[in-house]
Length: 174
Image 1 (cartoon, helix red, strand yellow):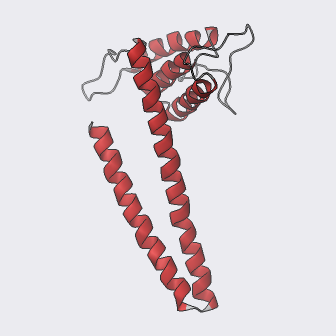
Image 2 (image 1 turned 90 degrees about the vertical axis):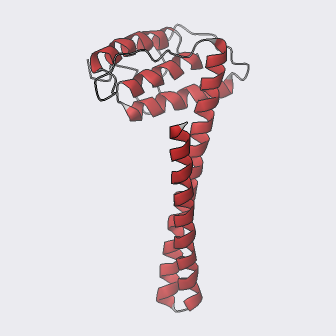
Image 3 (image 1 turned 180 degrees about the horizontal axis):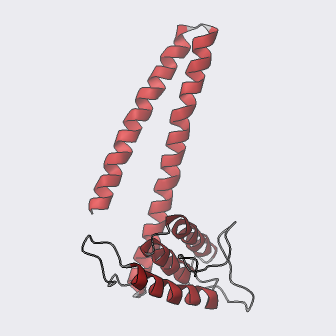
């Protein structure tokens, strides 16, 4: 719940900031000189990019949460029982051990969004956020192609990887 509150507060602050920057851009354009109009248009680009980025991230989070809810209803959501350091971070060795298991599951069923979801969680536990995000994007894409939620038939070919990403490997490079 705390993460949701933080997300909404951050989003609200960003929207307010976008509004302020956008209004300054409009003021520059209204001034009417070629230099201020050029600066005004350039300033308006920033809130447009920011709104787009915020929208795409919000969509990603909503879709990932929907997959988590569906997986939880099926009883397949990974249990968060990994040992933690005194500061609350997951111990690296435990995360790597779970990651190895999740990677093997994904290699065995590369067309199942559930294995990609669990692999994304394992990447996040291992503190590899970029790969966690790519694995979650892959889970979302696979879920979309299989709206019934049932895994697509698996082929004996090599495992699929997120676009531009090598086949799943250990986050620590092992």
